[in-house]
Image 1: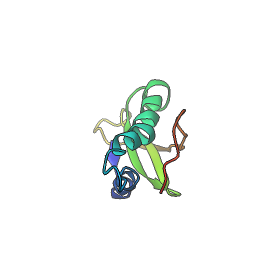
Image 2 (image 1 turned 90 degrees about the vertical axis):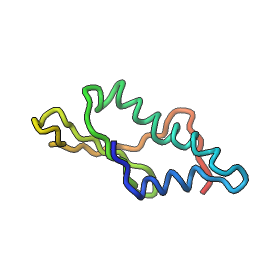
Image 3 (image 1 turned 45 degrees about the vertical axis):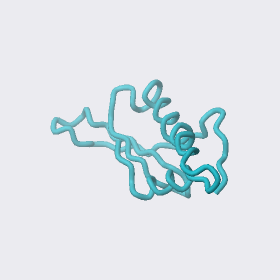
Length: 95
């Protein structure tokens, strides 16, 4: 898994609240990173492994999936653009 600097910044800004500090960070990671990845690991594009590249697109986290099993050298050979799905039960966070 690779996370761009922009994605790290997005997670950090969404996970910080002036009243609660970084307490909301765990919820942001759970809702916006762990849940989408778990879904893909169990039922989607990562059932046979691969590389996930997390970036930012249209102000939201985006997930690109690369198949690493096709190459002998372990480098990604094909990339598939992921779609941002709102996790069931996810809450919209204030900016």
